[in-house]
Amino acid sequence: MPIPSRVLDRTRRTFTGDLIGPRDAGYDEARRSFNAMIDRRPALIVLPAGPADVGTAIRLARDLELPLAVRGGGHSVAGYGIVEGGLIIDLRRMRAVTVDPTARRATAGGGATWADLDTATQAHGLAVTGGVFGDTGVAGLTLGGGLGFLQGVAGLTCDNLIGLELVTAAGEVLKIDQATDPDVLWAHRGGGGNFGVVTRLDFVLHPVGQMYGGFVDVPLRDSAFLERYVAVHADAPDELIAMLYASHSADHGAVAQIQYAWLGDPAAGDRYGREMIGELAVLGGALKPATYADIQAINEIMPFASYRHYWKSTFVPDLTQDVAEVIVETIQRKPAGGSGILIEPMHGQSRRHGHDHAAFPQRSPRYHVSPMGIWQDAATDAAEIDWVRATYDRVHAFAAGGTYVNYITPDEPPDRARSAYPAAVYDRLQAIKRRLDPDNVFRSNVNIAP
Image (tube, rainbow, N blue to C red; front, side):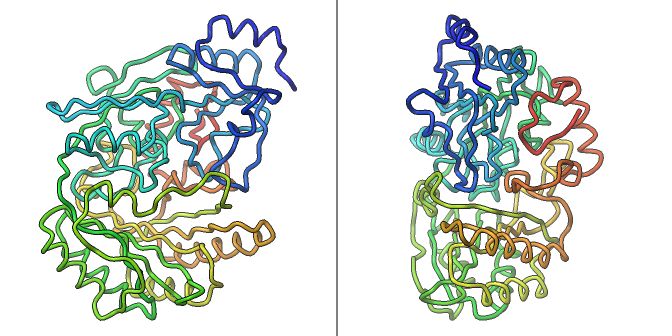
């Protein structure tokens, strides 16, 4: 149902940002999803200029009884930032980043992307673990955990969150840190967007100088390569993070892309890389001295609304030979295309924090394994989704339990959050949800119902 014009006129009198409705120019562009499978038509898209505007938008949604969604960078595969017939709070105008190089601290607006934050922090030789696509939203990645190329030395993104500004379901603006409300700070280190609209995030930064890495593609003929990859990672210091993406290439067959990041002496980085590659032919790419910006650019940008996405996620205690054989066999048998299996190590500092520090649920497993459907032809939707589900089922048979809430698919069961977190963590998150959002206004997410 259209929002009455008199209501919009009244809202505009106190609103300093922009309001975009279905009849306004820019509406179709503003509602575009990262995932081309999602085509939703919200009743109103709100682009606030500051936290006061966010409070106004929340009250408007509640007064009109509209479902509410919050959009930062917009990279949600499940499309949580867009609701059919509802109100979207789109934070992309709130992208300012400030850096205090002496204190090694950064502040990012709720709509900032990793390109925004990395550019500002790297000007001072500093960084924090960040998303591997530059246009990923800082807020969304952080609130779900945040795996990235610096997690070995710096932990997950959420581990480095030291403060935030939160607009609650009542429209109240709260300044949160360890001194003012440690429980709410803890909840935002992995608890998702369940508690309000995060309009500012404060991070501790880490020195990041010369690095070594890049990507190389190697043939995936058998499990021996994955076993070697595991052995190198098990013995390597915190400074090494190597992610893998296994897929089937029309030109080369089963291929593993090593996305390699070493923070330290290039000679040592080269040695670990050679051990990992072994005698395999390099089909593309190269490992070499690099900047952090080079490493962050490995995956470039995946355009919005250009690809169809269906991802599933599980953590395994280790990448055993049984798991490795499943991965190799699955990739060798699948048709050529962009879909594949992402392997992300839980290494170094990312495994050392406990649930007293952050709500992020999975610290003890050594690997995060994600079958990812990425394709363009809508006619192949069923086949791609079936492949992801079948692959997930085979890998999940070896799982430690849980999932990564940033990789949730649109068709997960409503109570998915309960199985994503350990019981004690979920209960603590639920208590905070009851305090901040007892009416579950913020439910377009991996929802923790009050």
